[in-house]
Length: 402
Ligand SMILES: *[C@@H]1O[C@H](CO)[C@@H](O)[C@H](O)[C@H]1NC(C)=O
Ligand SMILES: *[C@@H]1O[C@H](CO)[C@@H](O)[C@H](O)[C@H]1NC(C)=O
Ligand SMILES: *[C@@H]1O[C@H](CO)[C@@H](O)[C@H](O)[C@H]1NC(C)=O
Ligand SMILES: *[C@@H]1O[C@H](CO)[C@@H](O)[C@H](O)[C@H]1NC(C)=O
Image 1 (tube, rainbow, N blue to C red):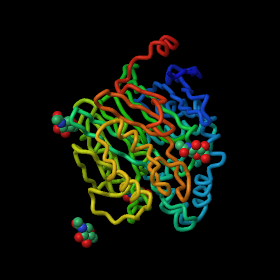
Image 2: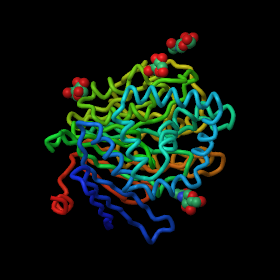
Image 3: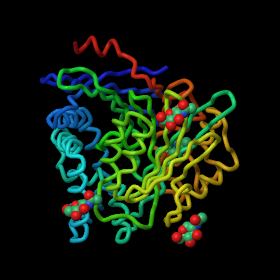
Image 4: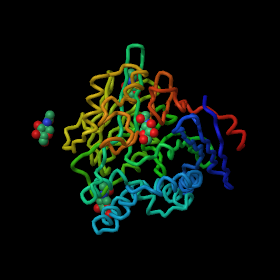
C-alpha cells in the first residue's frame, strides 16, 4: 500500500542517530498525503543529550518548518504582539517559568533552533501558541480557536478505541511529522521510547502520542475564561508527559500545579485497554473519568464546572456526535470524517465561516494496538499510515547505523 521514500541523515557524533522516512501515497490524488517520520536516539541523562535531540529534529525538519512558517500569519501576529509592553512581559514570564520548571526541554528548543537555523525567539513563540492566542485575541481577534475532536468507541466485542481529529487554524496538512524517539542512558542502554505526531517546530508530546510504558494519549484545547499570565506552558507539560510510566503518573504530570492554562487529555492504557478522559484547568485543578461507553470531547469542559468561552464549532460537533454515537472503529471513521453539517463540519477544511483545518485524523485501537492515520477523511479510504504501539524493531534502519 504505502511506498517509503527515505531521507537518511547521519550525525557525526554517536547520539542522536536520525533516520527520516517520508511516507508518500496517493500521488494520483489531487491532494497527495505526506507524512514524514523521524527516528531519533538521544542521551536522556544530560542537558547536552537534550540539546542534541532538539538539534537532530531541527536539522532533519528545518526545511519543513521554514516552509510552514513562511506564510504563517498567526505566528507573525504573535511575534508582533510580544513587541508590546504587555506582550513582552507575559511572554518573558511564560518562558522563564517554563524553563525554570523544565530546563532540559528548553534545551531541546534551543537545539531545534540551532539545527533548523531559526531564531530561538521564533521557536519559543511557537511553543506558546496555545497561551499567546488567549492574549493576542483582544487586539487582533485571534481568539484561541476551537481545535480538535476526540471520540471514543467502547463496544461489546472488546472494542476500545478513540480517534482524534487534530484541527488548527493554519493549513499544515503536508508539513507535519512523526517523531519516534529512543531515550538512552549514559551507557547507551534503552530507557524508554515514545512516538509523537505534532506541528512543525513543536516540542514532542502535544498531539498524538504513545510510549513504551503502554500509554497512548491525545491533547485537545479548552477555553477557560480564567488563565494565567505566567506559569508553565502546555507544550512543556506535554513534553513531560511523554515520559509517564502509568496512567496515574500521566495524570500527575498533566495536572502540574504550575500550568498556565487548561487542556483536555484523552488517554488509553495499551496494557489493560482502559480509556480515560482528563480535564485540567489553569493551575492543575483537574477531573479524571474512566470511559466505558461512547464519549466525545469537542473542546468544552464536561467534567469540571469552569467558566469558559462558548465555541460554535464545538457545539455543532457535539450535536453531530449525539446523532451518530458510534460504537466501533468504522463508526468512528465515519464520525471523524463527517461533513453533513456544512457550516460547522466535524472534518474541517477551512470552508464557510470555519477557519480550521483537520490536519490529521488518528485512531488509537487498543485491541489491535495500532495507530492509524489519515490526512484526508478517514471513512473514504484505507489509512495512509499504520503504526504499531509496541515500537517494533526496524531491522533495515538498525542495520544501517550499527
Ligand atoms: C513564575 O515566575 C515568577 C518570578 O519570575 C514567580 O514569582 C512565579 O511564582 C512563577 N510562577 C510559576 C507558576 O511558576
Ligand atoms: C488499568 O490501569 C489503570 C491505570 O494504571 C488502573 O487505574 C486500572 O485500575 C486498571 N484497570 C484494570 C481493569 O486493571
Ligand atoms: C458551577 O459554578 C457556578 C459558579 O460558581 C455555580 O453557580 C453553579 O451552581 C455550579 N454548577 C454546578 C453544576 O455545580
Ligand atoms: C478541502 O478543500 C480543498 C481546497 O478547497 C479541496 O481541494 C478538497 O477537495 C477539500 N476536501 C474535502 C474532503 O472536502
